[in-house]
Length: 111
Image 1 (cartoon, rainbow, N blue to C red):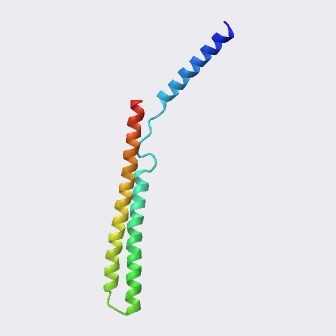
Image 2 (image 1 turned 90 degrees about the horizontal axis):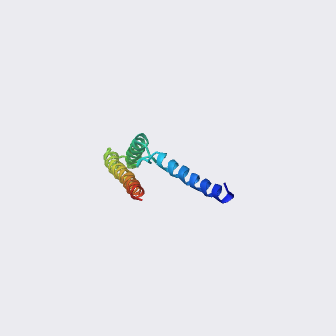
């Protein structure tokens, strides 16, 4: 065998090894960057923090003005609404990431 034949066979072998590695790689999951548990805790924290901040502001205003707990109720409800809004925004963000990952995976399968 000549030196050129060995180089050619070596390059063919390397190409086959690379193809086998690509074929044996596990497919990336669309939700690999964030798990369901992490997402659930993130949403719970967002909801509780919105309620807590609203409750704190309302309690502070009621104490400051000496009123009945009208501000407490009002700001707790506003905190609830803010928490739900942030929670829905987080869910939409995760959903968009999953769609982008799925589209990328489909594109890679076509190629």
